[in-house]
Image (cartoon, helix red, strand yellow):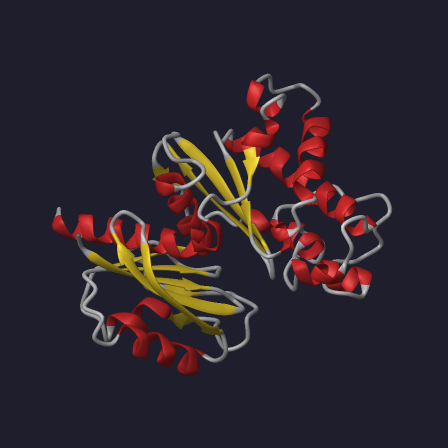
Length: 295
């Protein structure tokens, strides 16, 4: 079985690992995302001598995933200091002469859950991460969704909660979904990090309001067969029933399907791959790159 490399490049930390074509993660390591020079030094040290046959990179963005574009492989307009216009693929390709698959971290996680996780056996799924930022990736007809570039579903506009005066923190859009519902918004709005708030805190009803509005849009536009929600904020398990109920209220019976009624608890779910969703997804990107190189 072929040995593959995987990089989950996050805005807070990089996770690197090796695994097999079946999605099994054999080894993993993580380190903080600091400057490109320091962070990529750790990445290259990790893969030195590992003898992987292909590498998958799922990265925070925005990125340019369009092969043939002058900036293919770059992290582009990210607000993350030092990382704007950084050639991530080029930094790796200069040291590892193997096929490289490159996409957003959330598209990678969507691929992982579709191939081996909660959406295995289905035709489509959506993966959304709610953490330091918010992003979502989707598989439709067995293919990752791309267009001009890649989806940026964390920056959609959602209806404000009537009791929320917070202005939002997104440097581009202010009170978009990410600006209102990502981890930093929770901390700034309530004066404490999300992980320090009790389960019955009003923050969670407000958070469910924003996330359910986003899911309503995704259901109406993409109609995925499964929605998987990961990221640090979604480790608050009390959010799921709140989101289920609010999503049903918002849809108001317009979309008639059992998954959105009695089956809602099995429709909007945590990652089956757990904390390995992103890394397994990067293995999936490596597997795709290896197959394309053999065509």
